[in-house]
Image (cartoon, rainbow, N blue to C red; front, side, top):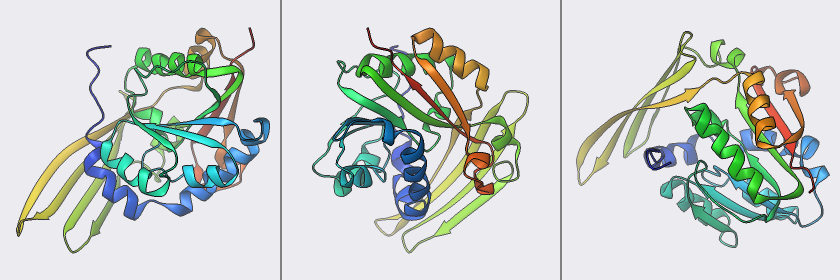
Length: 252
């Protein structure tokens, strides 16, 4: 795993995520977690928030009495997470290579974070790391953007932008149907020391099929694998092509 590229590029996006995409989306996530995941955990369960980003999910989980550990590859994202949940253990690490002893009753990964693992073998490494970190009968729940999402007008050929006093950002995204890769071209202009500085880079994501995901989870040892189409499950058209997988580490 030495060849793995770290996710430090997210440091640049941390402020944008914090200021632009925050509470409304995560209220939906909590509702989904309640229905599909949290009700099956014991009181005061230990939960790992994998790829926790800026920590939006952690405070509501703490209020429900859970003990939450967060792991993310961006120090800048974790900075915001620490402001929201200073009592939680927040760790700088990579989902593809982290190692925990069996500790957690449940592991979650929201925000389609695992779509950014571009190699299926590396994605299975994530699954294995989660499997090891879970206690017997522990649950793993994560959402992915599926092909219907990438092909839709809600994702493909979308442009976004934002203007603040000290930074400007432009975000364009397009889906490669042949390679099954989503590409976000991002330009950030930031005012530093009375000079504007420009940064351009790409953020890539991979479309995995439901069959491949379920096969990969099964190979690692997960059972009771379930898939939920969120658009149909919650009757929310803005979640077209968003799916949640829930699976269990068996006892013994």
